[in-house]
Amino acid sequence: MHRIAVIGSGPMALYTLKHLSMAKIPLAITIFEASSIAGVGMPYKPELNADYMLCNAFSREIPPATRPLLDWLKDQPERELSEWELSPHDLTGRAFYPRVLIGEYLGEEFAALCDKAREKGHRVTVETDCRVADIVARDGKPLLQLENPADSRDLLFDDVIIASGHSWPKKPEVDGVRLASP
Image (spheres, rainbow, N blue to C red):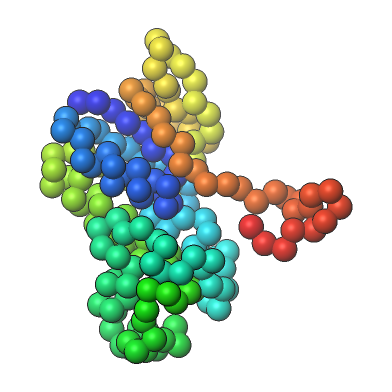
């Protein structure tokens, strides 16, 4: 079985997984996520965004993984929508929605894609709270080294996909200009 590691589980990993799940040969896909929640992605995490912060893409611009965002929103209970100050009448493909709400959608889409890939015969493992520190070569193949040196698993893969997003600098300043947000 061809072994693939995906570092990160945000939107890039979500669409990578969608593509990998279409492979004709069975794959062993291991997804490493540094945080405790897989599938959301840094720009959509509740701890990094206020509830009122909107995504900078309108809903029709977000490509579906298993179903469009608008369909997912329409399936949400009215009570849940009202918590976001939305009603079923507000839902349109040209609207901008809160980042955290999009994160909930992406998390559900990620889980659904993992299930679909498994149904197609792929082995999918998601490792949360697992930060990759480095990738080194061993016998011409990538070997992952985790931040926790006590973890002595053999993490040798055939391919590695880095989908880790970006990190925010400790000093968010460029050329004397303070950056307001990631």
